[in-house]
Length: 388
Image 1 (cartoon, rainbow, N blue to C red):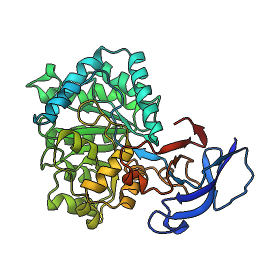
Image 2 (cartoon, rainbow, N blue to C red; image 1 turned 90 degrees about the vertical axis):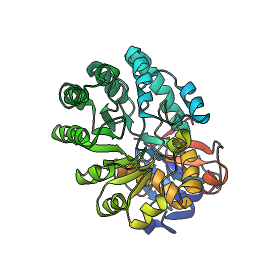
Image 3 (cartoon, rainbow, N blue to C red; image 1 turned 45 degrees about the vertical axis):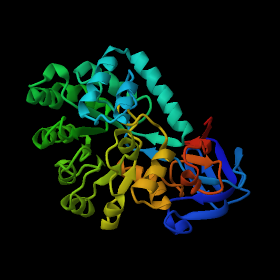
Image 4 (cartoon, helix red, strand yellow; image 1 turned 180 degrees about the horizontal axis):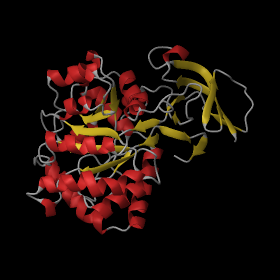
């Protein structure tokens, strides 16, 4: 194993308050020592190493942890986006457009497309991500999608319950039975998680419960798409069943917020989705003040959030969701790790996986102060320097 020292760091965000200033555990004028794929220590200027990276007084943060993506897909839905910008409302059924293209694509084509998106995300400082299936919606296509996703992450999610495919129109319960049976059996060996889109136009509470309980019985952890297009049962179902995360959380009633505060399910906000769909932005301040754990993710997908820019999501969270810069940065790093129930990611204390983003800026505040700018200048992934 090789070692790496990042020295001349002007501002190091550790996300471990006991190591430094404030809730982000900021240390100034320091160094980060990495051995193999792990952080060994902070505050050790001049430590011996096989390689050195001069941060030049810049800000260094944990790599972003993107806990909600749909990177494996084919096709394009730019026309749908343009229609929304002209006033058309977002509907979940647009997923079927991507399903046709994804089914027609070969595994090699899907891999090449996902690889380009993964490289783009890495350049934006996303060092770990979750990837869902959900655009195959038939057994073989879902299995292929999950297998392709394993090439890029160990956090693969089975989302056969994304929408009802066209060929099952009017036969939703039959499709749910397929998802819970043959499709789950084919996909589970590649997956860590099971997910369901609990929403009008997708799956109701009873159907969602069946999918989640089948996933749990197959040994998978649980995730939920919930409360995106209006109030609904998704959040409370996720908390009841012990899901790691419930994502979107755009429309929350008091009982939803109370459930999140009392449970261990992370509320994951997807602000780029609300931007793209022209839905109202969620009130993250309300959820944070209630004591719930929150995360921010990109939801990179072709229909409602075609971006891999976590800095863009952070800027939206501060501007539109009522979060402070510190809360948003923590949500995009440590919050994402918690949404994936990982304790090795999203922080830069001793023992953490050495996933690092060096910013072309003296402070992490520039992620919001300079929105839209490519501020990630260096990326370290599992202790290895990468080309951003």
